[in-house]
Image 1 (cartoon, rainbow, N blue to C red):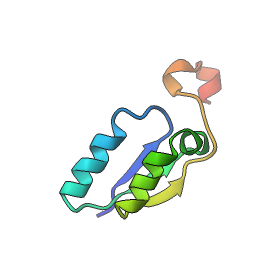
Image 2: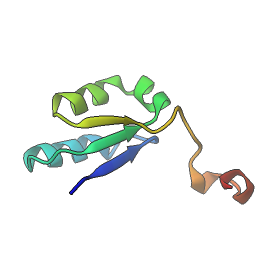
Image 3: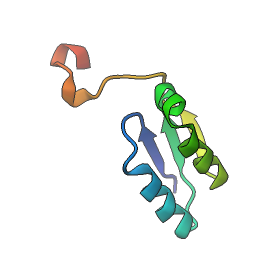
Image 4: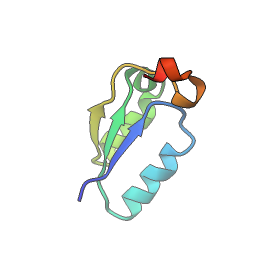
Length: 73
């Protein structure tokens, strides 16, 4: 089984997710956006320290809920 988590916007849920995964001895792949990594290096360091895999989710993209249909397509 594999667990993949995309992280491009926000941070409020990520530390709690890391704590739960660490407590349960579960590893996951965090697919992170470049802008997010630049803005939150301490969280990425925690992911690596906890043995999580880091993948590239691109540099950045808009939140689909705030984009028009044309922008989403």
